[in-house]
Image (cartoon, rainbow, N blue to C red; front, side, top):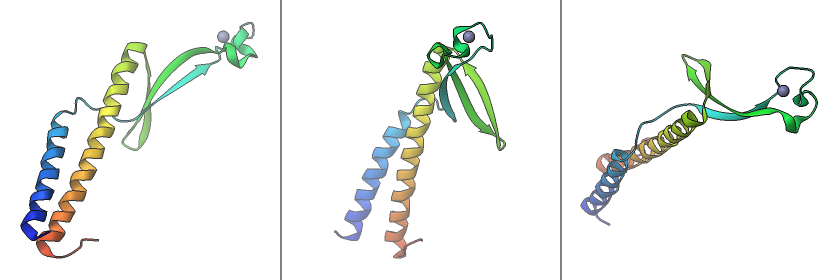
Length: 115
Ligand SMILES: [Zn+2]
């Protein structure tokens, strides 16, 4: 493949990623844990039966200024947060591919590998 054909191919791949990028919805960071918890009452079944623990409780955590911050989510919020976190992963995947293609183009243009 010659220089201009190679460049054109990279441009096509890059344009395809830009189309996908445009389709990414709102994004959210962090992750969600689902837990079952003891209520602490000695008379409750959950006290010594792990299967009787309460829940599920959905807990969202993220890093803010190096600290982990958490929030309990309702079932409705869970649906939204899950989708936004998934969108964020998709966004990061696309950006990673765009960086990869860009460095290939740079190598093609300059004749040097940036490593
Ligand atoms: Zn209980």
